[in-house]
Length: 179
Ligand SMILES: [Zn+2]
Ligand SMILES: [Zn+2]
Image 1 (cartoon, rainbow, N blue to C red):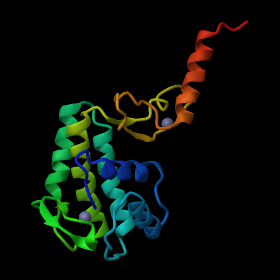
Image 2 (cartoon, rainbow, N blue to C red; image 1 turned 120 degrees about the horizontal axis):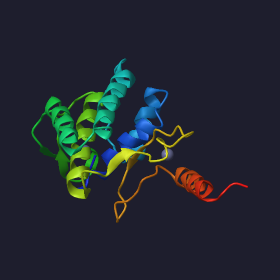
Image 3 (spheres, helix red, strand yellow; image 1 turned 90 degrees about the horizontal axis):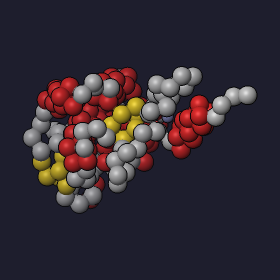
Image 4 (spheres, rainbow, N blue to C red; image 1 turned 90 degrees about the vertical axis):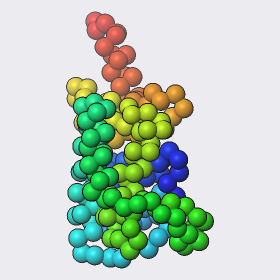
């Protein structure tokens, strides 16, 4: 997989998995393909459960209280997958960098790709560009989706147009005096 300079595909893959968890290993692999990963993964019985654990760790980065905490958690996750970067041309993708050892399991590959991709995203786009949907904390709303902000102005607060609209309706209702 190409981790572009912004780590965009990897961090968007993580959010996609967090927001819409796949029911099977096949669906998990399909999701990695949708986000541009081309390599075949050796299949192991615990792949789905172990990937869930990778995602749960990643969500602690999303929910970190401040930038220092976010960096500390992410550094620990990158240390756990530590491998030196290396050039590779697998599946004729063209030469690119991998931040992990070859021949690893699906959860191990995702742990490496997601942690490094998230670090690239945060350091190049901004440490604040990863959050939960702003609709969630409002009264009567249950959205817990993750928002990866890759917009130009860096002010995305909602996971979807639907959530943004719902919040706008609530703000409007709060302003309009009731008879
Ligand atoms: Zn690759
Ligand atoms: Zn939302």
